[in-house]
Amino acid sequence: MAAPANPPTFAPETPSAPASGRRCSSCTNPLVPLGPRPFRTAAVGELPEAVVTLELFFCSQCGKVEFYSTR
Ligand SMILES: [Zn+2]
Image (cartoon, rainbow, N blue to C red; front, top):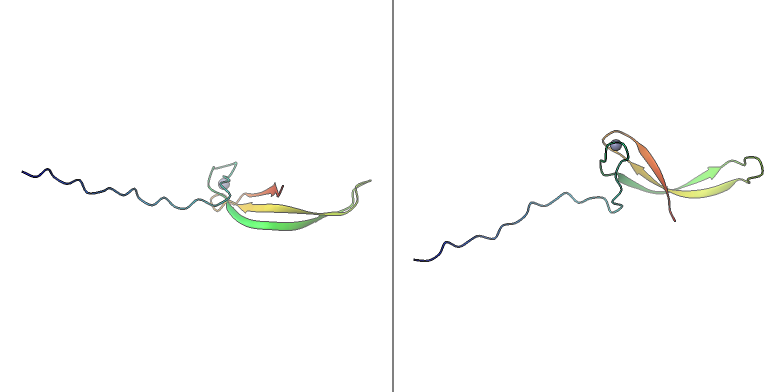
C-alpha cells in the first residue's frame, strides 16, 4: 500500500509590496512611491532660496501624501 503522496503546497502569491516598504502613518496602507520631486523653497529671513529633492509617497487608501528626504 503506497503512502498517499503529499502534493507540494504553494503559498498564495502575496501582492508585491512597494520597494519603499513605507506605510501610511494614518492607516498603515502601503504607500505608493511617486518618485523624487524637486521642490523650491522660498528665501525666508537669512535662509536663501534652495531646491530640495523629496521622495513623494501617496496613500491610495486615505489619500495622505507624505514626503521623505532622499538622504
Ligand atoms: Zn493612509
